[in-house]
Amino acid sequence: MRKLAIFKTGGTLPALAAGRGDFEDWTLAGLGAASDDVLIIDAQGGQPLPDFDDLAGVVLTGSHDMVTDRLPWSERLAAWLPGLIERGIPTLGICYGHQLLAHALGGEVADNPAGREFGTIPLDLAPAAASDPLLGVLAARPAPEVQVCHTQSVIRLPDGARRLASSDRDANEAFRMGEAAWGVQFHPEFDAEVVRTYIREYSTRLTAEGQDPEALAAGVHDTPVGDAILRQFMRIATGNGC
Image (cartoon, rainbow, N blue to C red; front, side, top):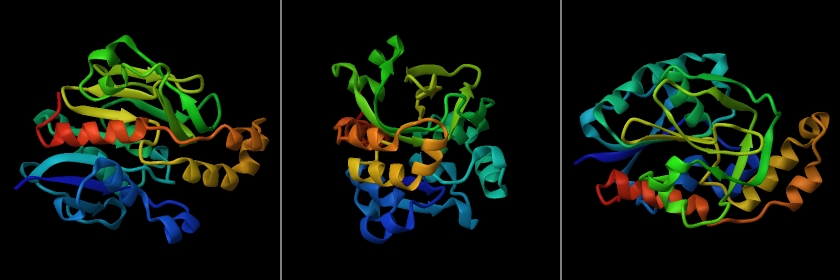
């Protein structure tokens, strides 16, 4: 039986992990998946990469590492990822996973020229998003809002990629490659408490860039968009998507 695999590319802040779990836990909850039905693969730990034939779909989590550091574990995973696209295996890259997917397919990742993007922000959906199998679930929502916490961005999409969403600070908030591979710079698995914790953790660096951490934190609120995207990806991976 094919399974969905969550590739854990990093861990959250220790204070959050102690009381709330980690990226893979939040992703599981958002997907509505039972842990027994999902493979959790520690990408940093050197676990063997699974056979493509064993996979129903793949989710790549966020990380505090940087794709531009070209860490050995990250480059190993990047070399494996194009095989998913070639086989049409549903794939979702989140934040670091979004950037790694773009890098693996020939795009370019770098520090965001507009500075760090933290908070709850509105997405500007591209026309292609309306008919997209994944982001199409947001088409009926005016200015859907998402949670963001990132320093680097995809500054050039891979050849052949379709831009699906942008924001004031990031031209490539979401893209699709092939029939069933998506990258989203935002965090569909984050809630407001998680984002506020990250803003507090990065407050000194945000202030140094001329941003106001208190104003950012005050603007953070929960949004249903993340769960809608993760549940739709689960439907796609299990063959029940539109």
